Image 1 (spheres, one colour):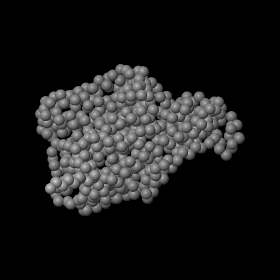
Image 2 (tube, helix red, strand yellow):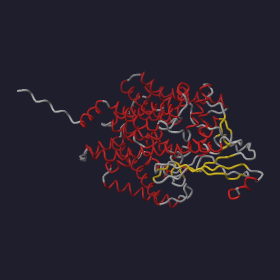
Image 3 (cartoon, rainbow, N blue to C red):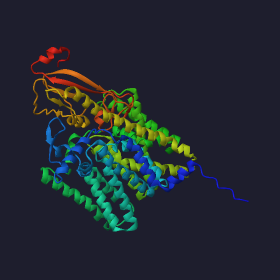
Image 4 (tube, rainbow, N blue to C red):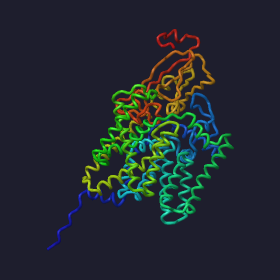
Length: 561
């Protein structure tokens, strides 16, 4: 009698087995799938600063910031504008010099550090939890990671160096291999020279080694390498520019610092929204209700006592969103403190220092609260969620696979939604610049503009000039384009006549940077929410004509200024 053929496994089971055997491949594919739709995103916010510096580096590699730019309404040395070290610019210069400077090329180049960060998060999580793949996916599908990975700024590249330096640091300690300490020290140096905040990985490594009770003679000397590199950078930039840029960045932060602890909680909960979605599984009902109560009371106190926070008047919808994300922030910190209290080992100490250190920097020391500053927290947040779920399941909590997926799916969808809204917000300035140029770009009168970020980049691409408010060079009839709700836009004191208003719709039903909706992902000066649900007001650009004679105002008196 012939043997019966063995039944094949279901496709679902086969997929699960493949994922279990190839976690790194899965993470690479998931990261690319999440980011490739945004590969053509227009340059936005501070992206132009990195592109300009990279283009300068191409021809002046030993003088990365030795040129002038108009970013605050007048010409300034570039070293006084940028507050980041230049390593990310060198990376962009290497790519742009070979493949060109288009948005698609530069975004494609930064897929590599995004993939490296997620794979590094997986490698690190193998030490901390039993489900490192899930922890890495939680890191990937957070709003702050997806949005930061669709810029050409330095944040994700810095985080890639950061996480891999910790991976090699731990491997070096456990295997007693000095070569891996050297790799870790090199990666720490690269992190610090990509973004100054990257130097914070040094005390994290030190805290973990102290928690493991490793003798200081074994590891302390390796930390001196990145510290020495920063000292050399300070003196080298001082020789080039007359100011050491490391110290200058600290002075800038202290000079313009604005911060609210409560807003930092809101940004934490929203930018790391997976924590909010998983809270019902993480906490028993009593603790969940306590957390909700703290968020509601705190939000009420904030709304009725803090006066000078944009927008001045929060509506009911904005207040509800504020309370939701504050709850997420409270939940994450409670989870962090509980983890270190219960486990009391080097790993829990590292996670706690990582989360709390990033938060304190963002809320207390950074020049302004923003989502980008919270990006490094995404990795420990994903690990902490999985550690807590594993702990609860081990204690007898019965949950099905569907129950575990229930919070993750909407959390991932929210992250993609936020990234799509950011894409739409970045697209509007390019559309507006093109529209203004199509009407006024070919006139004999010169075309000027105020406003910066992506609007400046594309206006200059179309041949317009940034208005220098300290040395105006206007002549009768010159056109001036002024976007609303942009950076460093000042009322015109000169005689002008309003000519035309362009309105560019922003799709997505979510705001990223808008004072009317209270969203301020890149700078909390715009609002206390990292992003805001609801219809986004259009981008408004008004074009004026310089009119010292008053002739234009006479022909259009209703629009004369």
